Length: 422
Image (tube, rainbow, N blue to C red; front, side):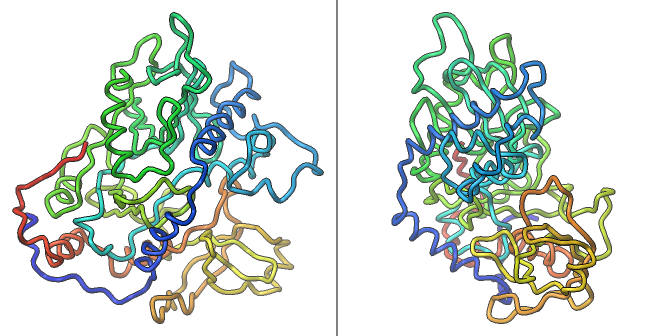
């Protein structure tokens, strides 16, 4: 399959308002400018201060390392996206999972093909592995997974990442990288840069962040082979402009890591915490071995399963902001199962499937299965449920993405013009 073989325009019945939300997110960026420097400093300090409660001999312990606090101090602000360092360091296991998950920029699943995909988007192959923040500061480096648990505590060649000759630099020198740790080659693949050497990149576009990442990471020595003062290697991923040739290269190109789908980033997107439609993930069986969700035994269930949150009015909703309503749970089930507001519950989607009207969910045939795994921090997002539903019934294929690009206005570009960003 060559990119130029795809000529047909791509059309799909509307089952989502994802494009409208992409446009709104871009508008909100200009209206909601933050104190980016303070936000970066808060996150870096929180990641480092939380790890200090763990014994040095057990650097990879999970939520048990989080300090326990009296009930009187657990106010509703503990669930805010903007906790200061003091508050963040007092969170318990479930709360710290939610807090850390909210600090990462989480891509939505691609439900429809974005407008101006070739002009306004990047694409790259997502490494398979553990998503985490890596922070270097004051002569040490810490990586934390999205559930708040420490992955590694180590010296690195990142600025202020190791105690070598002359000290670790000023307190203002720190870095925050958004990474995926790839177990097979023990490498941190950097998919985004939040802060570099004390300079916050929260309010910089993806276009600038990717440029800065590629120019600074290699220069720092962090991409070098491991050594005494540099325990793990870091590496940027090859990022392409998402024209037909760039998409084809990301999809079929050889990379040094196992692929787990493709990530799409809007060039104008700032680093937004939480779910955002300005970053998208897409998968098929050719670029990921994890396309359809499996059950606890690692097997694909005959019916799609979803995890929803129970609200106090019996409503079942997704993790989106605002949440998407999937239905209401029968009061008898709530009483017999001893369920409470905030519980995460697992459902199967029955033969009635999902019904849509005007791009919105109208009805879901839900079959209650029980409580979700306690390690989970959030319900499924609406885009994940829809993507999984589409994969089983009418998947969005790579040919569809290429067709959308070719039918837009990219005919003047030749298929061989591959432009790699980094």
